[in-house]
Length: 334
Ligand code: TXA
Ligand code: MG
Image 1 (cartoon, rainbow, N blue to C red):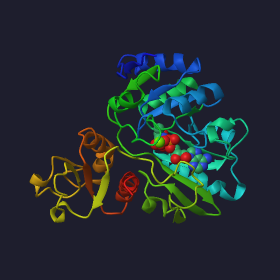
Image 2: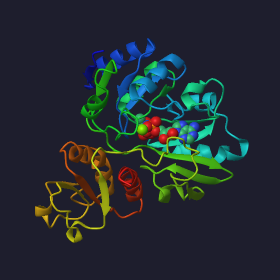
Image 3: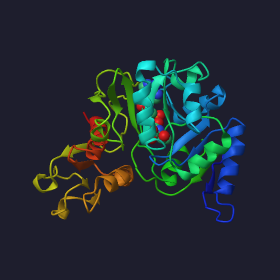
């Protein structure tokens, strides 16, 4: 299969990304899968209500069937059509949705039977979100139905933050890729479960624990522990090159004869130890660092190095979500 790439160019006269939207709609309506930009990472989308279309996502990604997909809603009207909210949780859930939707925020809730089993991998819950990306919003709005969309990478690999990343992994496996440049958040949405006024964070992301703590008691569900999020496998964001976490590059001496790359958080003082260096954010800005994280990791991964060392990022606010990705990437080396 040849992968067609269409740039999402904004047409001022028609006030939309017409060409990209129309092509994506044609294919989605035929039960095909399409890679689309979201504000977090690129997603691989299919009609939620068409199990055969959804099966194509698992095939293209080589994703195990036990790993459920996130369902993206065109609007809030769909919320009650796909989920079953317990009365005692409704107030808090509505508040969270009002505050963080559209945006990088996913809520796991009991599902209704309209959601096919294949989407949720047989679970009786479904993760839903409403994306804020203008291209995604336009396409799903015109489609008028929810789209299942996991990150558009092969299973176990880094999530794609540019169209080129999607091509690197899925070229020839998907019919269409809509290119809208680099995604703004750069890491996947925050995933939560709500019960009895408590918010469990299943996956850290752009909406931070600090932000969520204003709404209720927070619990961070460790990824290695309970697999209430089946996709929260310890190794999930893994580059090919071994990755090791270090405190600071200045106190690191590379093993002899090893070709080492550095993913830097701090200002770089000792360049000579490293064959390649990527700095997450010159200004040490968490948002910029998150947006650059997967691109920097991929770039270092492509250099055929023996080792990549990554400096720890302060584990607060969005830094905690960045550290979560780095720790998972490093765990492969254990
Ligand atoms: O930002 C994002 O969330 C991106 C964009 C494309 O929307 N999507 C994404 O999807 O990261 P994916 O499939 O790569 O990651 C979704 C995670 C998986 O770890 C999956 O196991 C978990 O969400 N998940 C989905 N449904 C769930 C459920 N019902 N219960 C627990 N975890 C669930
Ligand atoms: Mg993923």
